[in-house]
Image (cartoon, rainbow, N blue to C red; front, side, top):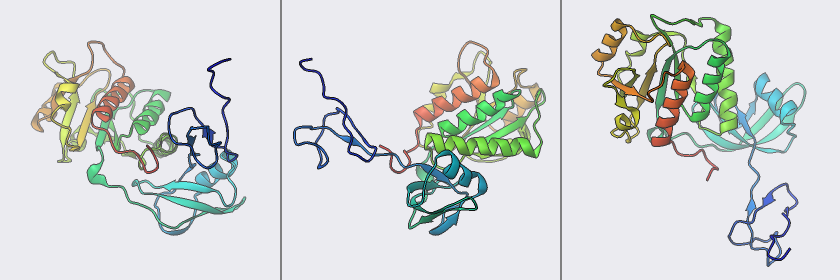
Length: 284
């Protein structure tokens, strides 16, 4: 067909050649004039990144070996809980151990990051797991599960916390965010308010609540933000009084009544879009 683009090409290494405008390169015919999209490095997590050889924990080793099917000599991106990242080479991939060698890495510049804490009542069942996954994907720095006066779910068990940590870590791999979202144990409202840093946003159904976009207009200097989402039964008068004591700003999302997980994710998405964090190394 006249004027139709040529068939997609490959440089032989698994990279994809696009039809985007730009200079060609040595792998392409001189008249191609197309760009090659570099292969994205697979991400591997380790709790703390150091220079030298790192033996992956069993979960990360199994993921690298059995899920991603990576082999010895593969170059990967390694990241840790605090947001450090570096390129590494797999020097051993076996049934007993997976070892990666890191020559150098860069630490996260926390001063430049958007620091959002979401403190929320916990929804029922799988809805809570889904909420944790999405908050992690969006780039939330810290999640505090709240024990409120009207909470229906109070997850105090170790197994629940460990599952949420695994969920947040897997979401960090997939989303290519910096670091892993910190997850606190179940915390009462008064305890969660003790930290004296940044602004406090209280999701409210009060008629005089400020639209959240307006409330954030003065917070674009990357000062820490703590957003509190209550249970579907609402906050008690005593809890509202605690928020008043710390100068919390009551904010609203929509005129509709939202589930806990919907409200938490909506707040995180709005904050992260208005006050974005820099991309992780290697991203555009």
